[in-house]
Structures are given as C-alpha cells and as structure tokens.
View 1 (cartoon, rainbow, N blue to C red):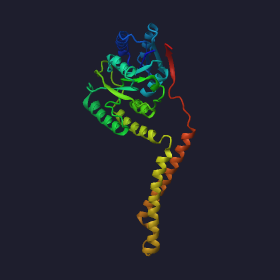
View 2 (cartoon, helix red, strand yellow):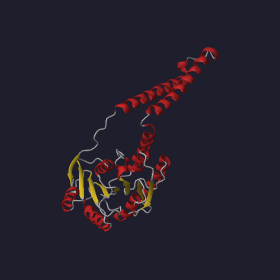
View 3 (spheres, rainbow, N blue to C red):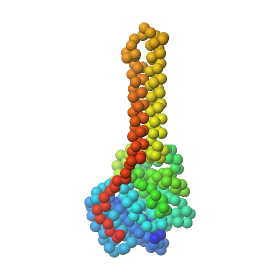
View 4 (cartoon, helix red, strand yellow):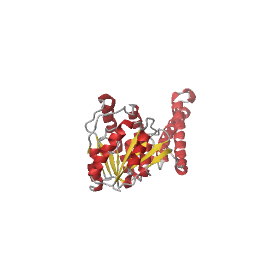
Length: 315
C-alpha cells in the first residue's frame, strides 16, 4: 500500500462526507493504492455511524472508535499502530486542512526521502488574539527549546515514512511534538512545507486557549524526557548536591563563626542564616531521594493501555 491517511476526529459528522469526497477525488487522480483511517475519539453526534456507512461502500475506508474521548494524541497513536501504507499522512477532519496538499507531501517523502514533512499554515484564518498570536509565541518557544526550526509545530497536516510512525509513542498531549519525538528516535531528515489553511466550515473548534498552556508544559516535559528520562539521577542528583553543599557550607560558616570568631553572639537558632542553611540541606536531600525514586521507576515501569477501542470497521 502506498498511502495511509489518518484522520482523528471528535463530533465532525457535518464535514466527514465532504472530506471523504475530496480525499477520494485527489487520491484516485494520483492513482495511489490507499487507505483512509478515521479515528473516532468518542464522538456523540453520529460520526461513527457515517464512518460505518463509508466503510461498507468502500473497502479502503477503515475506522476505529474509542470507548470515550481520550484526546488527539491517543487517536494518532492508535492510527499509527494500525496503518499499512509506505507514506502516512495525518490531517484534521474539520476541512481546515486541504487534501490538495497530499500529492506534494507524498512526493516529498516517497521521492525526496524525507522522514517527516510538517505543514506550515503560513496564512491562517483564525482569530488573531485567540489563536494566531499565541500560536506564534508557542512556536517560537518550541523552536528555541527543541532545536527544530519549524514554523508550525501544531499543524495537523504532516507526512511521515511508515518506519517513523511505527517507532514513536505519542501520548498525553504530545501530538504537537511528533517531529521532536521522531528526532529523538533518530529520524532527523525533517522539513516543512507551506500548506493552505481554510476557515472552519462547520461546528466549533474542540481546543480552547488552555491548549497553549498545556503546550508549554508539554514542551518542558519533552525536554526533560529527552535529556533525563533514562538518567533522572543526573538532574535531581546534581541539583540536590548543589543545594546540600550550599546549606552545608553556610552551616559550617555559622559554626566556625560561633566557635572561634563571635563567641558571644546570639545562638545559631536565633540567626536567620541557620534556617536558610537547614532548608537548603533538606531540599537537597529531597532532590536526591527524587532522583533515586526516578531511577527505580525507570527500571521497573510497565506500559499500560492508554485507551480502549469500542468498535472497529474495515479491518
């Protein structure tokens, strides 16, 4: 199979049929062998029933239905596990991503040899204050932290080699950082392509402004996972040692000062520096303990299912 298109969705019944017709027109014109995989992330508007009808009319249409809403990252992860195509393209179901971009995305991966081609919505049709400005700030921080010079980390329209999606684990809200996850897995041939962005035609966005706060927190998480997931003691142990030495040094100074210099000075427990030293030593010990616990968890962790699939169609 040449092409797999993974489409996560939540309550997008109004746009599914139109998206399907558009995709079918583009893909058949390119004469590609394909599969369209719809991931229903707990929809309640009848989206799954429409996916079932499409699958019955076209054997290339497949669907997975979650037991409840788990999030876009889990939907993509389930799709990545199921796809069979040599090139995997992800896109949203709200018609804001244009299927007309698929032929060039496919060519860049299959012919140019890129591991990932990330879409860049250079001209957006979203609210400036609600989405555009926060998105620019978020992407600037992501570039600075990750070292990947992509303009639009959160664009849902991306193309991957099959090997890439089979060797990354998308969890939490990490769908924003799939290129970074791939880079950490050794797939470094990453580029971006300017893609057309369209105004939402039906319904309302499923993401609020809190997604940017979560995005920054996830960025910190992935930075930590990248550098210290396999060796948490290197971070917590270093910080703990610094804090403990600061406290111990200050306490030693106070002791020497009391015993040999200012012997008539007030008691150590009456001096604020004593409590600063004591607090630093306690924090240092706690950081050390956190490092040891992290090492133990790293060696004993077990993977657990992150979502339950309620129904399948087309498999």
